[in-house]
Length: 112
Image 1 (cartoon, rainbow, N blue to C red):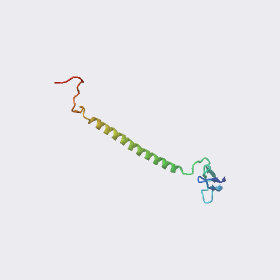
Image 2: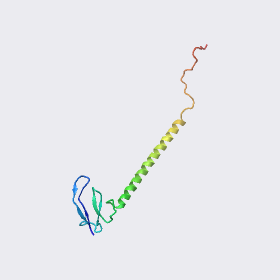
Image 3: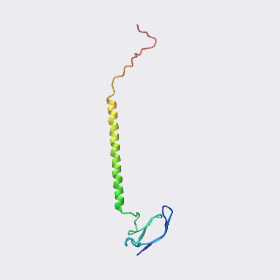
Image 4: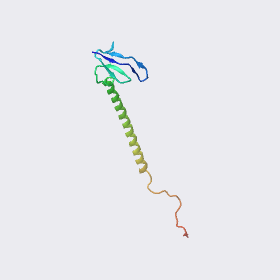
């Protein structure tokens, strides 16, 4: 059993010649032509839509989760720090009004 992959233009707009599956020197089980309009390859599963092993994608998602977790911890620490600093600023503020040195008087009255 074999399949023919027709020629196509890759992402760089370069014409890639058609080829048959399985390719010479390739996996003998890869008898199907898989891929998209700009990338085609031989595969062993006719319903395959991605040319990489699933382990590759798993490590990408683990890396993304680790990165997002670190970013969330940093953001959480920043928010806690801002809240603590605001609380300290408000709680250490003097409660009494500052004396400006001027006493207020009503207009028109004189004091003796």
